[in-house]
Amino acid sequence: MPPLEAWEKVWIDLATYGEDFHAYIKCTACHSGNPDADDMETAHEGLVLDPSVAPLSPCKSCHEDVTVSGTNSLHNTLAGYDTALYERSSPEHHEALEYMQSYHCNDCHATCGDCHISQPNSVGGGLLEGHAFVKTPPMSRTCTGCHGSRVKNEYYGLNEGVSGDVHLRQARMACTSCHTADEMHGMGEASGAAHRYDGGENPSCESCHAEQIGPQSGIPQHMVHRPDVLSCQACHSVSYTNCTNCHVDRTEDEVPFYTVEAHSLGFYLGRNPIQSEDRPYKYVPVRHVPIDINSFSAYGEDLLVNFLSRPTWTYATPHNIQRITPQNETCGSCHGNEAIFLTADKVVEAERGGANLNVIVETIPPLFPGMATPEPPAPATEEADTAEGASSGSDADFWGSDGDAAGAEASTPESDADFWGGDGGTTEEESATPESDADFWGGDS
Amino acid sequence: MYQRVRLWLLLITGALLLVGATLVSGAEQPTGDECDPASAGQGDGLAPSAAENGVPEADLALLQAAGEGCLDCHADQERVKELAVEEETGEKLSEGPG
Image 1 (cartoon, helix red, strand yellow):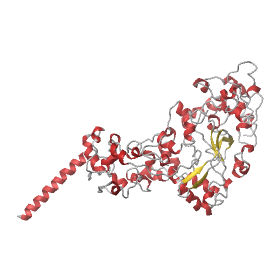
Image 2 (tube, rainbow over the protein chains, first blue to last red; image 1 turned 30 degrees about the vertical axis):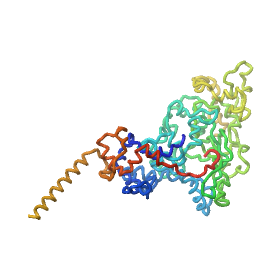
Image 3 (cartoon, rainbow over the protein chains, first blue to last red; image 1 turned 135 degrees about the vertical axis):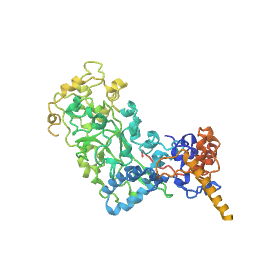
Image 4 (cartoon, chains in turn purple, brown; image 1 turned 90 degrees about the vertical axis):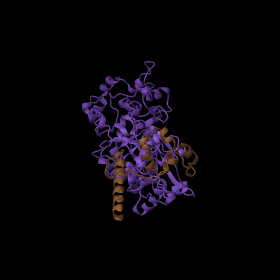
């Protein structure tokens, strides 16, 4: 999203704004300033650029419900960051962390205006529709303005070799199709949340796909994998971004900046670190969050004294859902395939402890006789159509990134028909269906 | 006699104010008791492009009142192009996805 020109950011388009009720409220009622001035500088004295940033913003006079709840929403409080950082720290360092956040996090607070009137500051700000108030914020100019580096790339399919989310590609769904106004405004279940994964799943796949979940779905893979064993994303999401670390600092002129030294695309299933009644899954996709024990060392030594109180590999809900994925092609894609699981060897030595021990997979679900193993998509000869020829020996083979052509084709179908797989494979999957969950999970479930 | 004239003048002024208030409240108004739409202002006039932009003539007066003169510049594309200056946001030093 290219930044707006300076004039575009402040131009009031009367064609749109003139039709908006808010246009008939005095400018100074929200923005203050000096309406009696004769020159620009004096007119702007005391100007409030974003009136909705105030705790009791003018929005409240008409929209009390969402304004009050929105003030306590994660979008406004960023409580999720506090929850995570404070748990890794200790009370005596909270002040230093708050100081750090004043440089690096406060631009991320989303006010009413950041979604409904203008673009967020993180992408340079500026009016969305000539100061008209937009009831449903446009995804590509507001949501992805802040959630642009990871979620946007996943959802839009901007990561090289990885398709965008089916909800966008096929259903043309915007963020707000799933993430409702109540959730955004911190109402209902989202009220008072201290972290985005607090409480039940909201949104949840089940709210639209209830009939396709569980034994009654008639879908063989869904019948053998109980919904309390695997999250939907475990089988239906693909490679996502893992950030190894992030360090923040500021220049002598107090200009904040950050450095992410390494990041990569990958997909790992780990043990669910936040297993609960609401999220009962045993295995979920896990990603490395952009944190390092020295991430904030520019603001004090050893600020994260309890660094591993939280895992560095965390519960993840990648936004690149596909029906057919490498891991759901055959049983052997996961069973007996260490490459897909977050085993200890994939975790850097300094992080192989603490809460990460609740995530690292020690025993890989075995591949039992009769279970299907990965196959090449279009075997040219009978000899090529063997389990051995198609088995995944390494990460690269499995994901087809740097592997041979057959591997790549297996992971990246060329047409929608290929991608969605039609009805094929059912017979093979059925023949591989073990008789009970215990069989399937090797008695480990 | 002088007192009667003052009384009549007061009554006429009050009646005129009532008529004026009725006319203003007859225009499109928002619902909601706590909303505070502008019913008067000191605007000096809208940008000439307002009518061209399809703003109904009846609404122009209200817009003008609410605009308080701000719209003279902010609704005039040529003027904001001339006057708007990009804020200095400092050097872009960050590296990596963020």
